[in-house]
Amino acid sequence: MVYCGIDTGKDSLDVVVRSKGKSLKCITFKNNPSGHQAILKYLHKHKVTRVGIEATGYYHLDIALELDDATNIDVMIINPRASKHFAKAMMKNVKTDAIDAELLAQFVERMNFVKWVSPADDVFAIRSYGRRLVSLSKEKTKAKNQLHAFSRAKRTPVAIIEDIHLSIEQLEAQIENLMIHALDLINQNEVLQSRYLHLISIKGVADKTAIKLIGELGILDMDMTAKQWVAHAGLYPRSFESGSSVKKRTSIGKIGNRYIREALYMGALSATRYDPNIRAFYLHMIEDNGLTKLQAVCAVMRKMLLAMHSMLKANKSFDGQRFYSLSESIPD
Image (cartoon, rainbow, N blue to C red; front, side, top):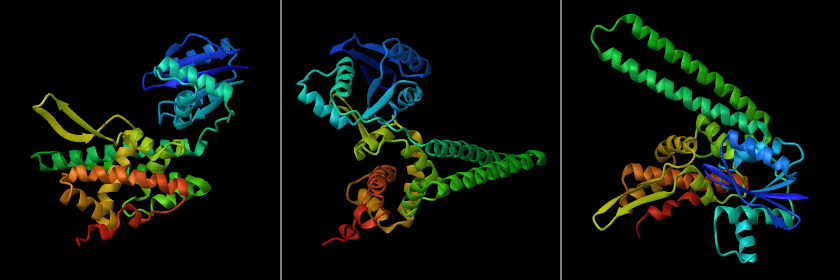
């Protein structure tokens, strides 16, 4: 049997093939469709049958799906904690992409192989609905802004105003139609329906936000930690310092899944108004931690995502007291 380890990154994939206890030289491919096809050709050439890929949030998914569709190749998604412990057991103190890829190949060779089952097609369908809803909502906002501008301008032809109104009506009809189809699909799938009900148990997470989150979070491995979800969404704090005189305000990193961030942002804005526990946490961030309103919203977004990880993993609805106890906001 011939094994392979693939270390994934945003732009590149490092591949090591291992056969009869020996590893071939690490080959680097681009992490894009053409690079994936090149990897498939390379693996078939060496008659690879089992591939190990470390779960890295989003970057491993496309190549994993590509290999899962291939004939005579089984894929194992390896939990980062498991690969880390394996590296310690193998006494590997040096860390490079090539070494990581070889360790993954050895992991597949030596450890119990658990074949990866890709997310259901319904999850990818919901993700497509969610992303299309994002696109249509942005078009609707743009049209409304145009309507406002043209309405204030003198001598704007009535036909222009009527045309923009028509565009807005058409976009609203499209959004409503996609919402109906997405919710129908969710109601037909027991797992998706359960996740949907858990998410909308958070005051502020409405149908559209829940659809977006179900699609984006549904493709993530539930073995990933909550912190890995946060990193995947790009909701980790980022500081900037240069020398002793330049120090910018800490901000949220923008590397990651923007669809999750956008959905959480709208949910957080609403939740800080309607959910007493989330609002108490929001005010605590401002009044006690000195955050600006926008920074406090970002803190709510991050904490909401951590809560969602726990909720979906435990199959439970939202518990406001676990999010932030109202007693914490009452001074002694």
